[in-house]
Length: 370
Image (cartoon, rainbow, N blue to C red; front, side, top):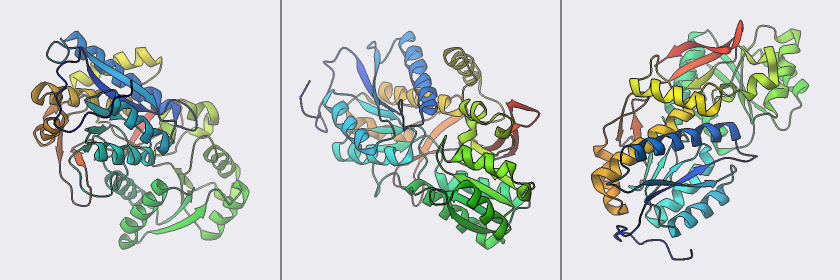
């Protein structure tokens, strides 16, 4: 179908279904496990919506496109989905990919509710067309920095690969830690071999090492080297971006996978809806669902509320952002304007620092919560 994108103000009432475009990393080098959990949540919610009568009697349809963690591929997918007449876009996990998708959505006048990406600068400037469900990186990583300080860490090394996302995380950590007596030591995870990186940690007298690097490599090799270096027996390894969340982490690292704190966006207790969704996701995934699965479900729940209250015409649909009040899987979902963030920002998402229990790596321990 090669029709141009539906212009702002055009009505779509002649379509038999209401379509939502879903952007998901389903192949490498994308974080495939995150994509699988995100898609499971999106699909489960669409099924629930249709079981409840759809959108004004019209079925809700998910049109899925694999971004493979490629910003150009994501931008092309947004163009294609616009030509297909989707009412809105949903999903994406990788921040740099979501940023590319958000730019195209803004240019085309297509509503985009980003599920999981956290980069503060999701758009170059303010836009009415884009909203985000997940907390901004500046929120989550400050929570993580407070956890580090509370645990007594003042000399913190980051092993980082080149990336806008990792650079943003490093800056947030430094800006938050420096006034509180903390020091951030930057190490190049791409240029330094794991053994050389261990030597740098010893030389800098770091008490914590944060993995700002991809999975499986170089993150797995770094963990193994640090764990086996007797000079670093007391160092804490952390992964604020959440690499240990998914089953691949213990599968790759075994006992070395435990005791590595990361950020997770879940409450102490799920809502009744969340408990039901969690059980259904576990059945679909054949493993414990991550917070990303709940983000997927909540994304469709929000868009469904907006479509039912404001219709599927884009210019009317985006007027719903400030009026959203949806009971999601983790609590009440609302959106507001936040200084320094150009998109409608979800508010009130619970934030935890957790790790895998060394006694039982299949179980998570909550170390800090906000």
